[in-house]
Length: 302
Image (cartoon, rainbow, N blue to C red):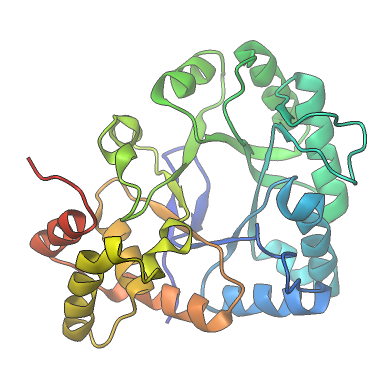
């Protein structure tokens, strides 16, 4: 089973239909470079060639481990696409100058962050750079200038945002000569708001594919909490119909069904779950099943 490929927008990059997220890469039990290499190789064998990073992941440590892993097999650098993010400054023993958590989307910080990401991952370019969170002090002209300089220098090929509202997206795009190719947003059976507040509609209108983080509701999908009893009952019924499909596979199939071409980002380090996720693309829910899951998850159908 190999996952398919898709383009984020008409002028955007081509990514694997399923993206491997690295935010838990160095969480306990942390993977070392050799173990991370094996994970990358297993993903590539499954057709999962796109990897989602951020400067802050793993207390500013994930990119470094990822880079060390790639250097154990440098040929992989030509087989994968790397996404990373910047704009958040955390209080950390690795960033002693940070006295308070805050956002920084100045031109200087964006460029410095990219330079550091390229260095620690030992890459000559980043395929997609995202502004990680909306910054109340965001100056769109300054961000646009930073993006232009990084693009002209061949350091970043494409740009986007994460967790932006429609108006924030429009504001930044209005100042840019380059297209914003995605908005990475939280979307799952358990977090459906963006399908109702205009965020997904706006991206769909402009033929931009959203990247969907936390597709299992931060693990809540598997919770035994009684509030998920109705959802689990429907998932169990569908599992029987679809050859014993797991709840995670059905949750991904639910995202895949949406015509806006949502691109889920996995967060697991377990290859068995990654293989199962790759197979989820074969599950074709019906429209009634999609709405049945929506309703069971707590969504009101007018």
